[in-house]
Length: 361
Image (cartoon, rainbow, N blue to C red; front, side, top):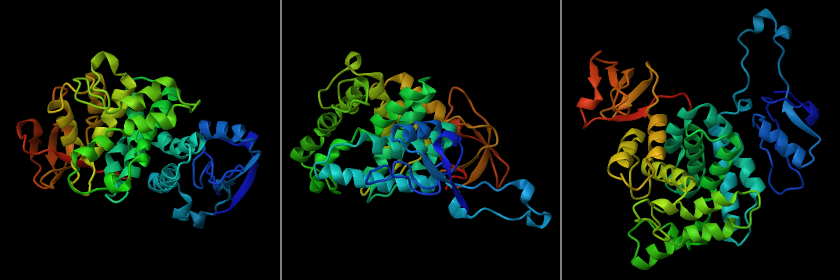
């Protein structure tokens, strides 16, 4: 697809970048196939980028009648999957740098997550597919990025503005950066940890805080949230065993996002679980550990199923959502495709929605 250079002063939101953009940096500040947002414009001005290369739009007036079936090259369309994969690779490189002793480059971190944030904040259903993208081998990198995205959606649902939502997302992204200071032999172990090894893992929020405490772009409340994201309201968390009054709401947002993604993903020692089953477990078996406002926000996000949404049940049957009961939002009435039967999940507790059928994958 043809591309052209245009001045940043004339660049519009929605244009698609056609080449990686560098600004005296080792890694791109904006990646190829990124859809330009207002945040990207700010990045360009901050780095004194005067012009960028974008894909040239095809004028519908210039198309001939027999060209109606022409399609844009697939590689020119910036899908969430492509941008997500690129972000994971970039985050992995940054993480390896931290392992080697490098400081966090907050500009790179912010730049790699912003395009994904724009997409999930516009379409929350994307978070249902995050466990499908993850892999046991590179779980940690997927987990950091996914925690950022889920945190942002929860923050948006709770009513935080875009600036604070971005801060919370970056907090989610960097919450486990301290794992870079844990020896890989312990961090990547796929068998039971010893008490000594557990104690070392429990130190990672302290390491994370040490790594982010001097980042001027990150609010002090978010640095505190990074330190506290494994604390629990009933005092069962770590590293300090804090209780309700001393744990920030931002730490709770990251905590719920962290647990939700961890429980829905396949790990080296555990199979992945349904988002609907996990949210019920967080709400019921983990009751008392998390702020109820945060949990309710995530339930509303997960269970916000428009009538007609196609779902797959735990018995592999598919059907359409017919009615959502506000008292049991994760257990709607489903009209089964094969039999046409109306199936009430609130009365059949052994079954649950295993996934929503979306077009993201």
